[in-house]
Image (tube, rainbow, N blue to C red):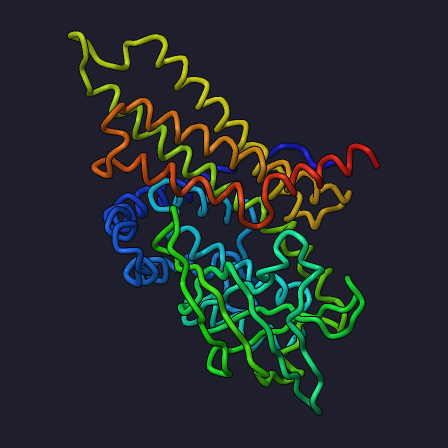
Length: 381
């Protein structure tokens, strides 16, 4: 079993550079991005300028070949100032992981360089209105037509809907519940329609929507993996993406605590800094301990992914990391609002935004109830 890791000197230096970049280029846009609910292309271009869009992709396809731990550091530092911007990086990797791990050489060579450069963006089309946690119940269908497939169906909760020009779509190719699902990489211009965009509690700068495909013609060359391998590819992908959702949650929590501590040092009540209150000190210490525990769990899960899951523990360790880190994010951001009192409840300060942003980390890429089912299944098997 993999051991918990300590960051290398290079990774600590990378984190320091990222923190400065995020403070200077990303943080100033975060409140406006949340207020307008619009995708921020300036932030994306800033990520491109630092070559961060290619961080998690193989070097042979134009990426930097960085480890999953490095990607977690990026997700955390971005989320520390703007969860929406961190999601724009995470969703591309989520969409492309099936291509990286199951796609043909031709598919990789054609599309990964576009994603790595930031020229293209990719969404992950798995969930449906009646097939969320139970993805094997999906009804989107792909029917063979010569050298092509005709895909029809509706996908919901699609991050980057309308922004992405590529969509990884899972569709039913036979009645078999698990072995009847196949994955495809679909270009938006082939007929992917954005049916509606959701109005959300948080992460408002990352659009979420419903997409529809009506007999969209997709060449067989854009099939990801073998026919019937889609469910396996979907679960394999989520095992490797959940730890970085945990990293996003850690970043949100760290950002909220950092701001609250700074505020309490400056804010004076009863003639002394709010930070002198021992009750609040202990609350902050509890937050800090839980964040560090969550970060360690996330790094361990990411290290397992980097080692290609040698002992088969990634499924449960990743579930633990994502579940624990997101629960910590929700608790810490709620406490951060409390630290600021009435001011914390206003949008004059960022902690209320961070509290709203934290909630989704307990829901997407598998609700925390599903994560607990994964953990319990391993315990009682």
